[in-house]
Amino acid sequence: CSILTFSEIVFKQFLRY
Image 1 (cartoon, rainbow, N blue to C red):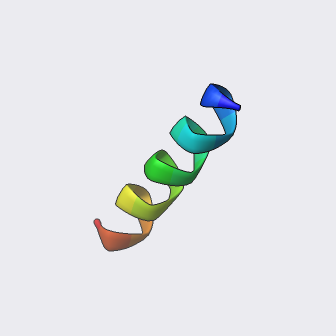
Image 2: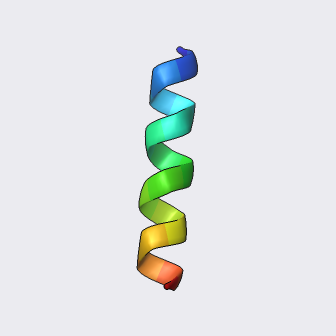
């Protein structure tokens, strides 16, 4: 479950950047 959350955060941050 932790990995899923981390992936989502990274993906969202990358999109914002």
